[in-house]
Amino acid sequence: MASIIVPASSILCSDNFSTNKTSSRHGNTHQVRPSLQPSSVIGKEVSVRSSTSKFSNPLVRNCSRRSRGSSFRCSAVDSPVLPSALLFDCDGVLVDTEKDGHRVSFNDTFAEKELGVTWDVDLYGELLKIGGGKERMTAYFNQTTWPEKAPKGEQERKEFIASLHKRKTELFMVLIEKKLLPLRPGVAKLIDQAFAKDVKVAVCSTSNEKAVSAIVSFLLGPERAAKIQIFAGDVVPRKKPDPAIYNLAATTLGVEPSRCVVVEDSGIGLAAAKAAGMTCIVTKSGYTADEDFANADAVFDCIGDPPEERFDFEFCTTLLQKQYV
Image (cartoon, rainbow, N blue to C red; front, side, top):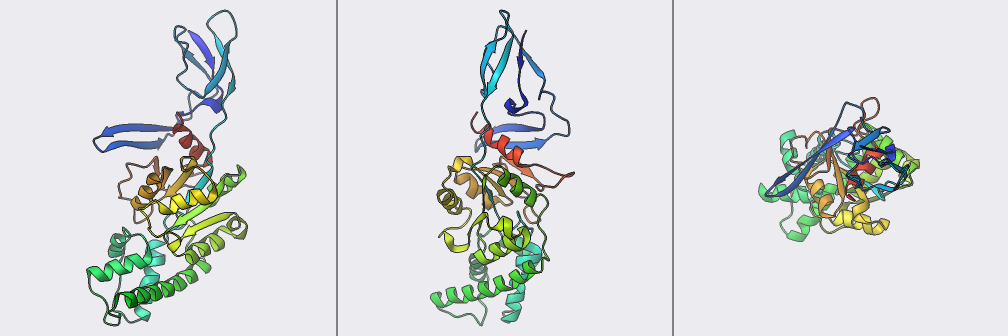
């Protein structure tokens, strides 16, 4: 038997999480499951047969014989491939805003304008399959009926929808400024860990830019907000599941899409991230718990803070590293 000393930094996938890869006629799917057991290989000797001189882990480099026998020691290991950017969706990822934030603000706007429209919890969950608030209202009125107070012309209706959305955003921002909707667990931690590694952080959302900026500024604080670039609202002509918002972020930040890790909560967000060629972690939210995330690189119920942490920036790095093997 030949003994290879493998430093902890060279272990690509340990017992800290496991991957299942299954094939179907629609393509490959990946699931990542955290393990409750500590790694059994990190920092320990790994034994292989002396007749096999190849290493199964291509990250291990510069291994030389330490005697005339069949024993090897690794003298150097390639550096981990850090993400170039960590990209977050906003609603449902930074804050679980939909049910008690955006939905309430839409309904308050409808009531103010006396439109006779109310979106209940279940209906709003269906409407979330449509990216963008203006697009959501337009689709709803087209499928049901336009309010009596709505204009008849196409251009006038666009202006009507824009005015409703503007008022809805104002009401939503009041909720954020009062901090009535908290950050989801682990968000601030993960952002700070990325900053500590000089990794770029951005928020990519279909929501109104003012609303997203308010969430970042009031809930993450001005110091973090100053370092976070925001891509939101109508900055792109097509919204998620189209990858335009993520393509724009990669181009603007000057990074390769393949070196970006995205945190999303919805199927349309996941589709946008994967279409852009990015690694995507899903943190399920109230409205998306039952959606199909088979195409995600990893799925969790949240990011989490210690002692209930689900993953951290090191996990993001390890997940990205898999793409280079």
